[in-house]
Picture 1 (spheres, rainbow, N blue to C red):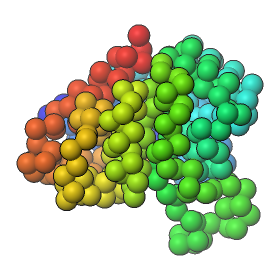
Picture 2: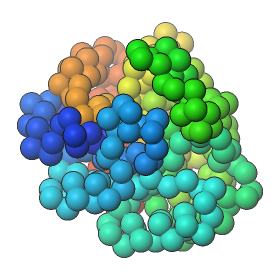
Picture 3: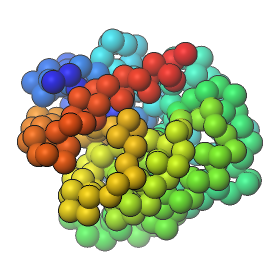
Amino acid sequence: MKIIDFHAHYLPETLGRDEILLRMDAAGIEKSVMLACPDHPRYADSGLTGTNERIVELVGSHPDRFVGGVYIDPRNGMEAQTRARRYRDLGFPLAKMWPAHGFSPDDPAIYPVWEVLNELRMGVLFHSGPLGSGHNKKPPTPLPVIRSAGFNSKFGQPVLIDQPARFFPDIQFIIAHAAYPWTLEALEESYLHRNIHIDFSCPLGFEGINLMERLQPGRIAWDRVLFGTDSAGGGYEKDTKRWLEIAQRPFLAPHAAAFFHDNAAALLKLLSS
């Protein structure tokens, strides 16, 4: 089974490039989309220091194995547009955004950024679904860090991508983590719009596929579902093995090749054209 991991992160202080490649090889992953993280204490405190420039270095070292996703906050207006153009010129086909930092994807104030991404024919991968509170961590995330991050899970709802997908058809929108618990909403948005895709990364992705298997919805765009680990530097073998086991079940088995590889390959080809 050929595999592309459409959702991974980089922890350069704890897991170097060579170790990542070894783990990818062990899991049978031929290529990983490495998504940059914000330069913010909430991420740095968790070791997520794979910021934009470090992803540039990583991708440059092995462009055959890594694809870069630039972190952009669309509320930054002109800077967001400049960053999108710069990283597109560097060969990055998509951006990573966290709406749950406090913005709604359908806010007209950020539509000028969508217009640039539409012109560049880039993809946008949204963290979708809820975000952890930080209070449950050990040790807990400091309250000033939580407040400065501005998290609000309500902005992770897939329906907020509906209007942008209509208005900006040359952007490929990717809903991460199956948007669980809003997985059915994500499936419907993907079914309605050919430029909306869904990745099933992290534990929320497992919850999403379990929900689908139980409810057996009929409106599923199987050509726009994507495998991802959200590995953040580890878990490649464990998560991939679990997904390969799930893929043997009758619900997913007919679509396994598309899920693990073919859909991602087609999307990356589209974003590179």
